[in-house]
Image (tube, rainbow, N blue to C red; front, side):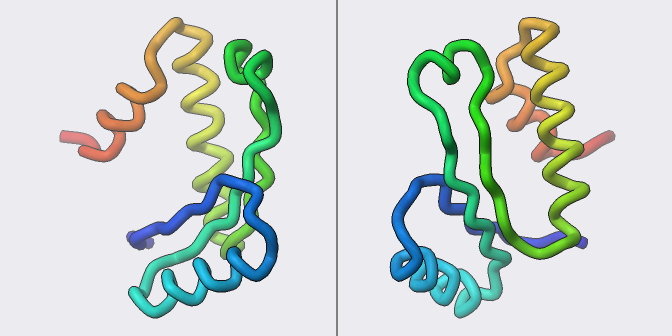
Length: 91
C-alpha cells in the first residue's frame, strides 16, 4: 500500500499531536507519532529508541526499515544514503 506519510518525531504533547494528526488526515496523509528517546550518547552509538504509533499495517514496514538501517549501520554505511536509495525503489 502506497501512502504519503506525515511523521512527528518530537515529544510535543497530546494537543499538538492531535492537531498534526488532523492536518495530516485533511491532506489524506497517514500520520505516525514517533517521538525519539535518547540523548547525544545514544545518537552517536546508533542506539536511539523510537516510540511509534500509527496504523497496524505500518508495523511490518517499520520493522523492516529498522532492520535495514541497523544492517547499514553495521556495514558502516550512511543510513541517509540508504534512505535516499530506497526511495527510488528497485530497477
